Image (cartoon, rainbow, N blue to C red; front, side):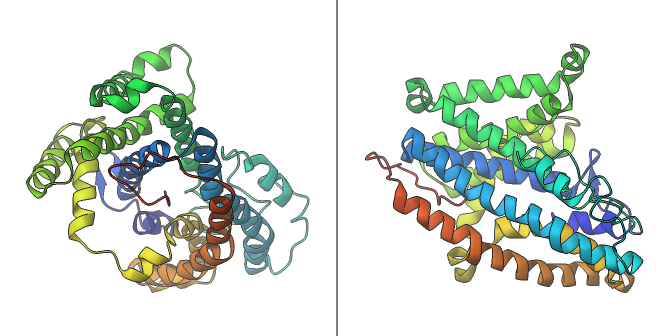
Length: 337
């Protein structure tokens, strides 16, 4: 994600593209298929109430903090770097408080803060990564609802059917647009087939396990529609892509430090605003690749702080206050999605 964003944040085009989607869009696809797998495992392991509490605890506190940090710290610093003073900063719409309040419900309604970020190559956008979290949580609610249905837990084919239906809606989006449905509907059904592909992968994995020949075949099988089919090739490949990525995770070992300290979410929510500040500090002048390296190092600092000070304490407190269901999942997944 950081790699893709660096190109247009620094004014160096869009970076590599495939079927009109840059690498950031494909990274979102990979995130959603893996999330579908992990969240389904969480739904099967936890009671109805505990599932929702865990999901809110994992996403929302750090999301709220990044809104406040961006509006109250990053944006004023940017204003000083751009103008040398903050005249009218706190009262010019979208004011910092309006930015926090307008986005507090996960649905990002505003990316701008006052008059800041008007001198950068990608002006006005303080965090172009946060928009996916609304649709991610929407998918959580879908899986939470499905968990009430016995057929969802007992058969693979129900999940496959739901994935096919979501794929059909996305593939025929022109028809649905004619009915007056807005962009939120289109974005949801662009991402939902990826998420449900991860759900399909979970129920398959739960019953038949992870096998290298199947993982290799899924990897090859996923790449074919991704490269050959425009518009919905990625969604068509979603279940295969999910299984392939999960198999790769068993082949490529995760560093023990990262396994213990999961800074991935903090990295996701802080990489963009950190990049905008680095542009104002002139780091982009060193070239896009140097910029990426510096942005990685800077973002790690904020992501680590988010993990140690917000995410991990909240998750630990949540686990102490809830209980898991008696039925263990046959294919447990870490509750960190």
